[in-house]
Image (cartoon, rainbow, N blue to C red; front, side, top):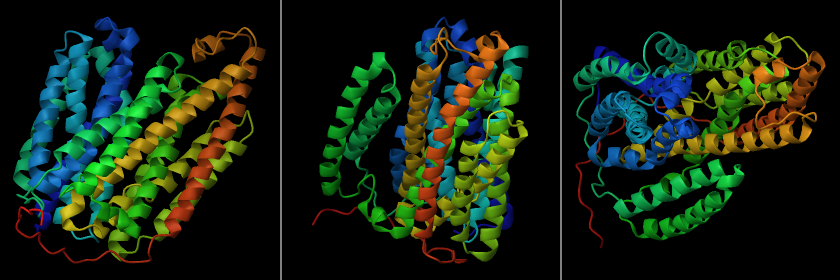
Length: 497
């Protein structure tokens, strides 16, 4: 479907606004987490305020992607936005933790639909050549939210009340809803009106069990539950194979996994999840301990990373839209990020803080060169019937990579630090503030421990990106088309022969 340039700009503005809302909601709440949990009397369970949101946003991706292909992305987008706004209102009125977690699950579900359908709608109304530029603009919501979110959350918590952390979504979301209803055309569903309900249920349950198993495995008290979840995930995957082989319209069409370009993009998405998100999650702790800085100063390093990622993503999207050639950017991006993380592993203790900031900015630049580009590439390789499914799969692989990478890095750091700390210090209760209250010599020892523990972690993540270089080299040397794809055929209900 061809849209006028003005309508495309309004559409992209609406999609950017809702993508920013979804990304901001995760980062803005993190700053207010302790205050919210304390007011509700549930400090020991406060992690579920974040976990419930993340799990819902992850496990529902394939279901929402397929649903968008069946009924059309506009309907799923509008329903997701309304659900997100209603859930935001409910979060602010939560009288207890159970209410808040349930509302956060609905928020996560709505956020997943917004993110996914934004990418799918762009793919349906633009040519493959145009997509990198628009994907980069919409993808800018994530790095901007990482920088802005904690500041906004802190200001709201300090100068207002925590319900406004959620209610701030409503005025922006209503404006975005009006823009979306005006600018998003009525996009039809695909040629497969059947929806794979059994496959969706089994896939969602199996993925949920897998993520919980990975998340809980590092906690001794939760390890038995993690083992049960791992077994359930394995059985669920086996059952899913049987169900999907018989399904008329499987939730994850096998044909998309037989395409070389799609497989390469999925591999690169896994690299982004496992390589970048895990290091961004733990690098503030590394800086606070190894460099003995405050929490505020430690945030400068991940900020440098995401700003590098933002600039690189926008520049790459513009360049690819001009030439149509894309293979160079994933290859050079993964190589630059691998070199940056390798340099982080080699940095000696005691170097000025600007050194890791500059190096991690280079990692961000390398990752930004392909992190949003791969969505445009993978969509150009898929049929119109599978745009939602292939976009969802690419997002899902990234989320799973982030969950696994974060869990592995967290486990390695926790175990190694506990084993290497000087006697008299307990890793379970060690905080940056507690370390700063100890004698100078002991602070230096703790800093050296964290430096030595993170060096192999950086090296391992550099190897992840090095594998990404090999994967990127498998991309075909093609150009993105400047022609609109053929319109979808009228939906037909395909009966088994």
